[in-house]
Image (cartoon, rainbow, N blue to C red; front, top):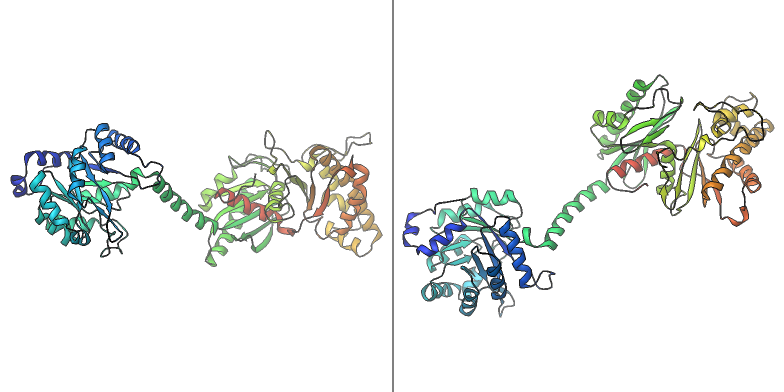
Amino acid sequence: MERILRLSGWEAGADLRIKSLLQSLAGGLIVSCQAPEKDPFRDAASMARFAEAAVRGGAAGIRANSAADVGAVTHAVSVPVIAIQKRMQRDGKVLITPSFDDVRDLLNAGAGIVAVECTARAQRFGALDLIRRIRADLGVPVMADIATVEEAIVAEDAGAELVASTMRGYTEETEEIRRFQPEFIAALVARLKIPVLAEGRVETPQQAAAALRAGAHAVIVGTAITRPEAITARFLSALCEVRKSLNDATVVGVDLGGTNTKAGILTAAGILESESTTPTPATGRDALLKHLREVCTAKLDEARSTGNPGKAVGIATAGWVDPHSGRIAYATDNLPGWTGTHLVQNLEKALQLPVAIENDGNSVAIAERHFGAGRGVDDFVCMTLGTGVGGGCYSGGRLLRGAHGFANAIGHIPIGQMGTDHEGDPCTCGLHGCLESYASAAALVRYAKGNYSSAEEVIRTARAGSGAARNALKEYAKYLAIGIASIVHLLDPELLILAGGIAEENDILLADLNELLPQTILAGKMRRFRLCTSGLGYYGAIYGAGAVAREKLHLVRTT
């Protein structure tokens, strides 16, 4: 970018060589290639490579520290080099180019411009006299590194050909300043006849552009370009801020079942609040989508009213899901018309928030992994016993999904044909003899031979001592044990967790299974196999739905 140097009075008095040199920098970017002691790049060869990369990117000049670095840089690039030499002084602080000998060494190394610190402190060490001597004896352009307008004015009077805002924010008088100030550049331009270079805390292209608009002759950028350690730290700081914000995130979890829809608000601390249950409509896809939108919106409104707005929604749903596309891959008639529904796409559009979905059985397993009995257990199975039978399996610390995402179809393990000559009872999936047909809530009621209207009533009266109810539970446990044995023989888990309404507060079922399983599991004494019931209760799948929502915010890993 060509730019005519302003103020014809300055041009008239300037040496043509100096004027040409400064004109080559006009409107350009100067890259400061420096590295502190113990930095991995603290050697002259690295500085030269940084300079070469900067020039390839379009840099008009380079700023470098020490004769060694200047020599290496000038051999690598042909653009002007602004040279400095940092030296520790008797007050224990560094000064920029404090001696005449340093200036000669930098010039001999190939410097085109020498920068001298001209702060109030540097002036007490003789900076103004040094500038006058350089101009008188060596005739080379001097750039004054300053922090205030007053310092810039006296540097110009001493003979500096240009000033830079390098020390703004780094001196005792300006230490409260922590950002780049284009208004300071404008103030310098208004008071000086010589060119002003913007340097110090210029961290973004937008700030560099603002410097030019404020009247800077050129812009010097160092740390933001040539310090990988500092660049990394700056990016990491931004990420940490986002992570902190997200780690404090409240999410909404929803468990869409064939009979009821449960919902709640899961705090960042893993506390479930505002749980609720509403009947699930059985009238098809559109009604289910409308129902979910209403349930989610109500919970999000509740969260917002507490001052902790929900940042994502997780849905645990019956049926198999593609967690990547957010589509329901397949669902049984427990949810009519649900197969093929693009659930995530629909809800994200409606709610304007990230939405994650997971199979309800997998969700309960995920909940156990993060909040329940599965914490610290790499190989476990979670079975959900309710309207249907589902579950999720962890092997080697990872959730099993299978080649097509249809793994963990626990409720559809075939058991009905065992020892019989018929095909087994029909299942909602369209097959016959599935475990779900024999271990669902409806099956438990069936085993009670019409004496009770619900599985909850069977369990309650069995605990009260009813013989009919007790026999129904024994029949139920017999079929469930067959299914569990198949799972154990295939996966060899350390733990099997029973969840869902039938397992909740059902010590009788647990006792029956512990009696039956040793008779049905091979090498039972050689396994460290344990059976337990979930402690997460009726809303367990909501915890899992919340976990997959937090995974979508990149806070946890569920698989």
